[in-house]
Length: 363
Image (tube, rainbow, N blue to C red; front, side, top):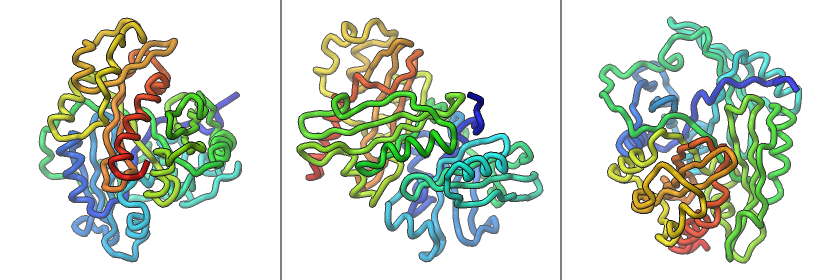
């Protein structure tokens, strides 16, 4: 079937935060991002201040409201700091918007042109799960640093980052019973396909469970796993997220690296806290997953997980939540051919999260 909704790549993710200046320093200091552009009062933006943070091919936009009655302020009050916008680069915004709304998506921003001396930036947006927007962006006629009102930082320091390269996938949590609705939504409105699914038998521990389905666009450039809680003895990590986020939203962002060991060493040195992995995980690891290039001792020292599928193997690690609410966290992933999502690590990951839940009194 032809791809009726072509997507080029992730364009950026926009975070709504309470204080964008402080958040920018957080992502710079801990995760190695560089602030390359800014909009705010000094650039003519009277309602919102935003910091463009870049590393590799990853772009995060950190936005804060400049008044308490702005929608961003309301969103942060409800959800805390969170990923509010998934922006996708498309070849034709008008065509994409017509296709997706004709197939059932609810429009949030109609096709719009923003113009400055650097050309025309075209964009539109639709509603997704919770309050998340999916933004469609066409940059082919725009040569500015990011968007109108954004100005380059006059003296950008030479920060090489920690080796993060691309957004590998973006994971959302939805309420019990809503998973199949959103799978159908992405399939029917944007032509996504079900790449893989996991039931509560595959993703469970003694206390909690979830169900998950991974949706992928026609070209495979965009992967959007979706989780929902499953009935269990105690509160699952998904239900904990839904309670503190006040509804569905983005649970975590996975960023790729070409050198997992070096990246994780730098992140740890900068102060990033990761989920604890017990040393028993690494006993007979190579016998379970086969030969790998990395040292098992180094992986164990850093707490890096390993999994294998028919295409190869992958390395992955998960941070603890980066907010006071137990909501948003990050994954770092390195793929050695593998196209899966670490199914063999689900139990270890769940148990690690449950240990943190118990410390918070939420298990």
